[in-house]
Length: 221
Image 1: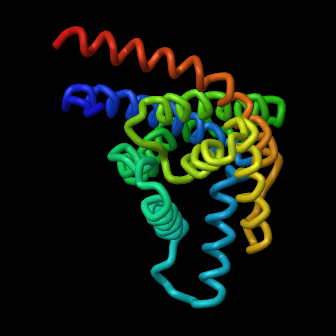
Image 2: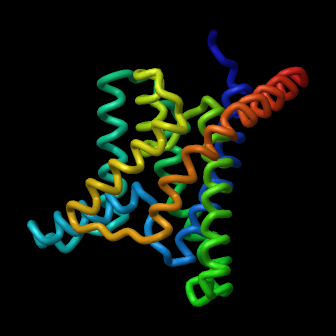
Image 3: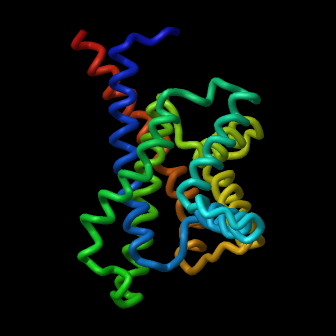
């Protein structure tokens, strides 16, 4: 069924809100300085490998992240373009700037200098917030971030529950990144084990919430 412009705008607004929530969680996670999230372990390892092999000055973590995201999108367009939507590009373009804004706002808290009794709970909270926002983005059905799409597509194609496939995908990201020289810590392990199961809880809840919001918005036409 073809969607109206208004429905697309409502769904994109939901996606933007979910993206902001998810990246607030990512920022809390990163500011504890207990390790990168699984996808960024992969990016870090790939960046270090490329830098070592090529010595190219223009390489940065952010540029490698963007390049990998584009490769994922290209692969999905070739395999099943139905997964790539306008929101996928929004996630790719806006994710970094959102994290930068939250980092500037939260950096004065100096979470990286706090005790582990504070940092670990904040990290776990960040993972829960990330899972909540990420599933809102997924259920907006306006597009999903490239790295999150990996688990979504594999879950759909294999029939394995998203929560399980997310853990598997994150473990693969970490293993590949570590093999190429990426670093990970306690936070990486907690994130890999926690985000998938928590997302499995939030998926049906946010699915119902998105449907209610869209239905209410369309009644006002």
